[in-house]
Image (cartoon, rainbow, N blue to C red; front, side):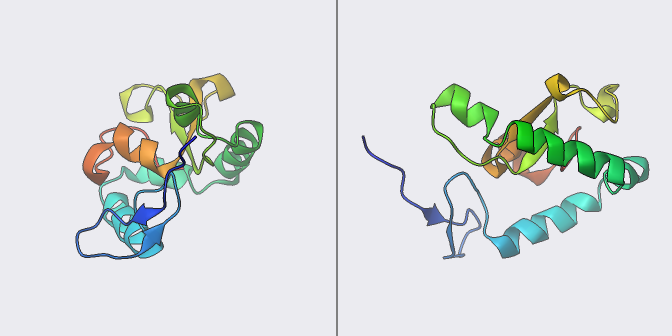
Amino acid sequence: MPTKRPRQCAVAGCSAIIPIGEVYCTIHRKEKFKRYEQTRDIKIKRFYSTQVWKDFRRMKLARNPLCELCLAETGRPVEAKMVHHLDPVTEGGTFLPTFEETQSVCYKHHAILHPKGVIKSSIHA
């Protein structure tokens, strides 16, 4: 069975090799996150800095350590790095949902859920 090869960062001109399941190298991921942070609602930003969210996120990723979307689409195990709200907070979802109201996802799928690094709703975990 063929395996995916590591590839380059998605930023034009960047030659950094990234792990499978990721979209950007460490440097560009930080830059994208910094730009994204500037657009977020202050209440949402504050919540994701709380110990309550950090504990929830840690438990969710311990319970579902693999990207749920990669498993559903390809059956391949890819490490989840983010917790995604199925019902975004900005659209009436709760700040602290149940485990069933969230998904463990890789960076690639989180970027697909929120195109071009613009988080229309939901969060960075």
